Length: 71
Image 1 (spheres, rainbow, N blue to C red):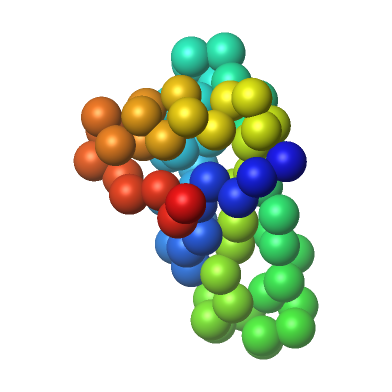
Image 2: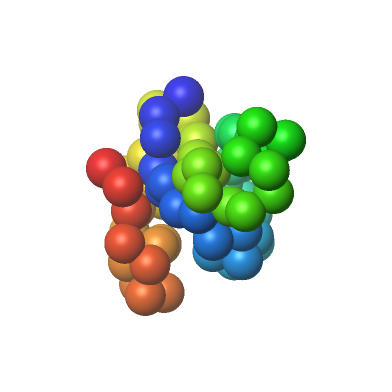
């Protein structure tokens, strides 16, 4: 698994996940429950992971839709 996206905005993670799933690429969000540690203020970033084989295509999909991948 490789990190595709890192953000503190949960709506960006949801949008990126929907884009990738629409193209048949499985995405796995990490650090979703970290709000317990930061008190719910959203200071800790969340990560979106994809399989190594899907990284190139996933980056292209995000760029085509106005998002900048972390990689």
